[in-house]
Length: 246
Image (tube, rainbow, N blue to C red; front, side):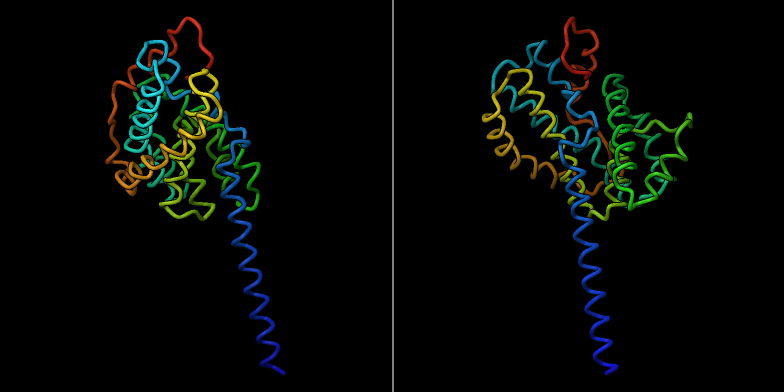
């Protein structure tokens, strides 16, 4: 009789653990869902400026530009994602946030990072209520003059608290970047919806290679690989007419 009770309790425990794991995956997938209103689609990652400065004038140019954006994102921002998710606590996040703020000398990209990071943190704290630390960390940081809410460290922090492993988290960050820049290309009429999907699938192979090259690096190893992209994006605020914020 006692053995039967123990077996029942063990089975119930397994079911609870399995359900918790499944719910965690739902949250992880929602973090990557384009319907999450984080403001990513308001930014073109410098693509709009690149088009108006004639750096991108053909489908081949577009694909090359996107690959350079991915490589630059991986080398510069993945280290902050990785460092934040390894230690998802307020002290580590604040430190990484300040370092990234000092690293981003491009005012346009810095403002875009802060805008997207602030929106992501606000939404995550409201949506993922099963993780009270998110709201606690955000509330404790609001109003501080030394916290900037840059996107990459916040993304890493949220991934860490959601239980995502480092490789998946960093791949997810590149996926979101690829998704958003291709969406911008579609709205700039550089490629149609079908062509954009084909291009995204094709570039995913390159993105995986980029991930393998730059993943699991500390924030101290962050660097720029495409400084020209940084310069061009910095010109965005000087464009006479513009559709995107950056």
